[in-house]
Length: 488
Image (cartoon, rainbow, N blue to C red):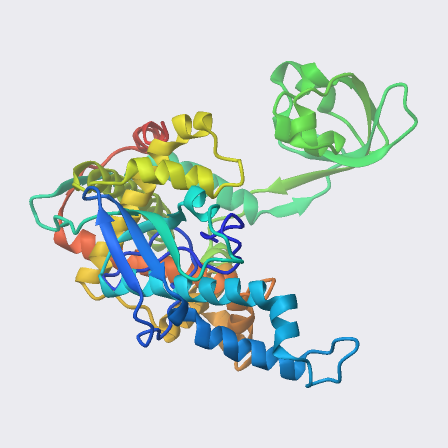
């Protein structure tokens, strides 16, 4: 709401989208109406390329016809004690409700007029027009017939985005090394291995049982992987049988917060400070025997008859790892692209206005200290949005509802095991897609998220196909270091 109570108004809408395609912060759309019949005097006092003041003069002839019409309507519908319904004199209505009706109508006129003025003049407005509240407080709604209002606005001029081969950005594909292949194969053989219950525990086994803190009678079901225990303490847990009890010092025995949390049934945050002596009574020992590399394993991992030989199996594993790595590579590449265009695209931003707007519309949450820490990040994020919007405008990128539904089907299929889920559910799948897009509250949260994701993908596709992407293959460890450097 950019006309707040200082104006006496409640309904002026914020966040404009100009006809040039510049989407400004926020999701609300421009409130527009056909007010061409009202010859308002609206001017723009442009103080610089990025800052200006919209001035609006509203005369009695602009609002009086509508005000009189509403007074008559109130007179017909009002139910006021002492008068028959539909017979309330207009003088009584004016006395009781006249000021409110006047304020509402002037508010309506200004709301639509400012919006239409910005649209018609193709102004790229950022944020919300900010009212001159000091001027507004001088209005006498009881005596004045004509009114003047002022709104401060922040703008950006038209700019260009370089989408040419001159732009060079580095991509970092991750090489799949033998170490990763060996670790993945070991994990697969264990994950699809045979579960057994040996009588005596070994270092690779899991222990299920009851745990209690010494001095407490409370017992809880728990389990522990012996391999997660500190090596100096593992001897206590090897050679245990059903009904055996082992006592241990928690701090010396397990150091990983996640392992501690699952062992004593607390949150990971609580696990960081957990200590004391505990008792663990074994109820069962479980062991997973590695699966053999054969046709049965091939079918379990990749589906029936997708691969038939060990060589095909290993190649498929490598292909899967590469596919997973590629997602990370593309994510980092897009981060590099964003950095490039934020740093190299010349956009004169109304920084002073944006700071004022952020403070004015934050309800006191944005202070000078917050701006000092976070404004640069906010400005760069806004600049990237402007760049993307410019690309979408120049390349006529449009997202239709059918595109959103198709993307949603893809997302749901990936979450539930692949395209086969759509075939299994048949006609029910469309209903699932509709419910997903509506979101939990039914307001279309997932629709907008999917829309924005699809739009982002199309914009990125345009960028990647236009610029020069230089590939530099790296190891996984090297990739992690590069990714970490982008987080600072």
